[in-house]
Length: 115
Image (cartoon, rainbow, N blue to C red; front, side):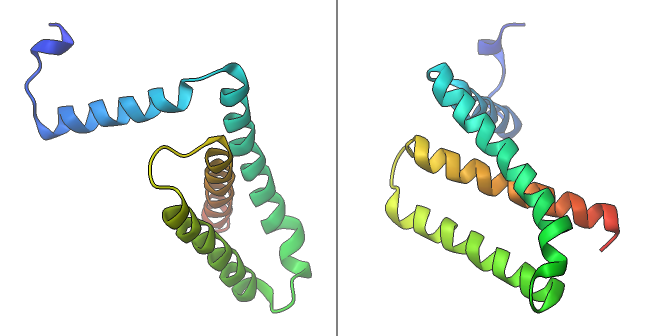
């Protein structure tokens, strides 16, 4: 069965959109792809260090740290929504991947701690 003979169901449209999104992340030069991947990994690294090393040093403890991180990430998301209308450039993709890596690391750490 070829991909063109599939019915246009919601699931097929969703899987095609996810495939296009993934392919969009992999397009471009090797510099672009490596910068995006490195940003994701550095965001994860920063999130892991943030939760393990910086959290005890932050004044106000865990609630103040979580509030500061959430406010910072929301500010980045709001700025991106207002400044970027169409396809984001490499700078915004790097910032997005840093943000995604950071959120993933913090969520993973919370899952490991059971909180």
